[in-house]
Image 1 (cartoon, rainbow, N blue to C red):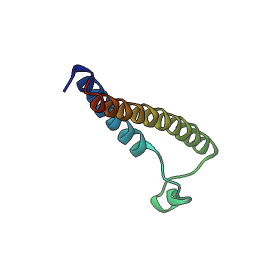
Image 2: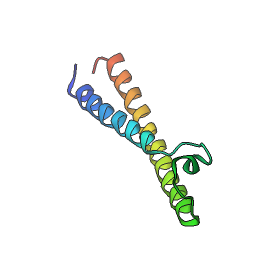
Image 3: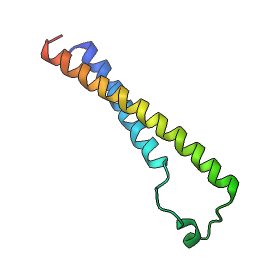
Image 4: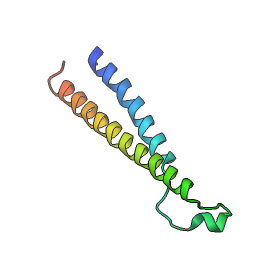
Amino acid sequence: MSVFQIILGAILILFSIAIIVVIILQEGNQQGVGVVTGGADTFFSKNKARSIDAFLARWTKVFAAVFVICVIGINVLAYFNL
């Protein structure tokens, strides 16, 4: 196992944890659940939720892209025994 594989493996672990955290922080697509739990849906809370969800969705894509690039990099390094 080379130094590059260890570094990419560590980066892979960090980004996999980041993906898990970002996905858990995202709100579900269920409509009207706030009424059941007692939460009030105001105009401002809806817009805030949308902006936060958009932010988290964007970062999910970024983390997933870096994750895929790291996996490909590790496989290329392992294939060529670098």
